[in-house]
Length: 159
Image (cartoon, rainbow, N blue to C red; front, side):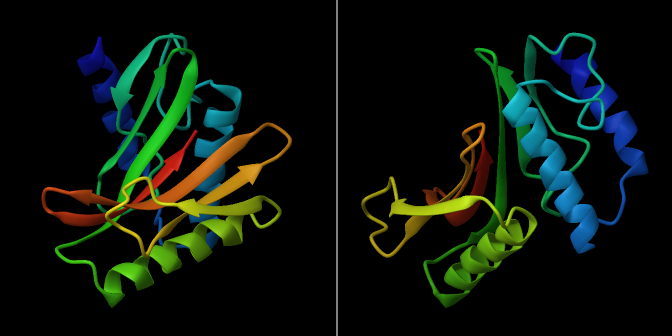
């Protein structure tokens, strides 16, 4: 089943637009947010026949050029996770990329509220996570920095 779903998603991906354009990028972001807020995988994200039980897959509409994005539907909830940037060390470039991604997301969903909370990883004391929340349906876009075995990554999650 997973192979079938992924192959359908990848087959449609040939018609991708240039994701560097701000308006197209915002459209992609808003489509992914819509899926998370309604808990339904849309045909623009991936053509599926059963939106109730779907394994992890790569969405057709992407937000990064890195191809490190996944969506899934678990326990009735649609979630999205992407690695936006990776660095071998915690440095100024990592911080700049973190802020760049925040402003890029915030520009598209400007009316949403923003909260800052300490990073989950207490060994990263310099970073506070961004929580950008739509109060109407409680959909949240979370941007954080995580430590991996290869260094540090800027991660974007929508749930």
